Length: 379
Image (cartoon, rainbow, N blue to C red; front, side, top):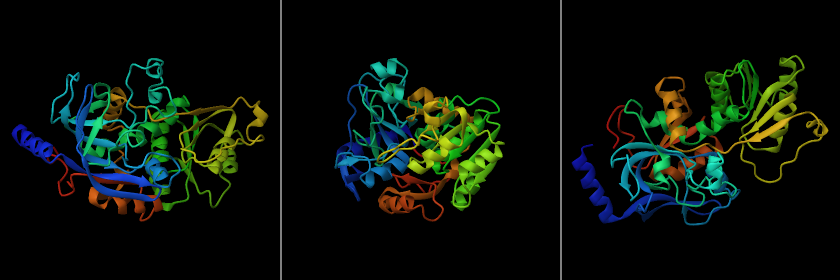
């Protein structure tokens, strides 16, 4: 797209001043509606969203398991082009392609200055704003807070589909191995192979795990688990996963167990699969009460470590992850199994939440650009 064309389109957008967006109205109630196009204030930017997705957390919101205010636009994974820059932003140009992380740290609060970027704001989940406390990415336009710290330019060599999953599930999944400090040759178990679990498998492999054992009953996800780096995939419907992991590790247990679903059962499996002194890295989102069995926890004297991680964000994190893709260390495009326009997103939610038709992740095109071929200009 030429600069003149982009400027003309921007003028038209501002004249109409509305956009299509998916609006949450309460548990089980979402709809595509016309909403005002946001305007950038100081330190903010507006991007024209060219690709977004649906995340498991969005399904928790839809089910009423995580509370957000009615009237909010949900979604937190976004690739787009810069539509408007507010005062105080430098080094960016309108029309540039950018990736925005699901977590948008300000870089100045106590949490950020202490190195806990994902907890920006100092309250639980303070760093997660899109589709949580401010309007999110399942729309034609997205207002980005603290834009100077949170927009990462996309290399021209990379397509939207190659980087969109870096915004959340990849950053989250990779962080499981990082937070657990996986060492070269470690044995790692990843419990559940949904999209985040599959990314955790990729992360464990990238960190140098010597043996990766995963747990999954869905046939398509079992096959994808092998593709993403698993050495052994166990079916929880066929075997006692924790017992089988101990057998495979000669009674020792794994060095690191990653819980990637967020249920009591998978948490217990991960804990029971650990060796004494091992680390449980939890990236699942839990709904309801979570308890720790005394026997699995060795009555509190097993030297176990439990760590949790919220998706690391910020432009430097996004840049590093895009470098992994650019250098062909990581390819997550096989996880994008289905494509929908924004007008079809309610159907996409139904498919994704029911895990039908082998779905892993759905690509949502707010601008309905599905007819474009790879390499075509998507501005």
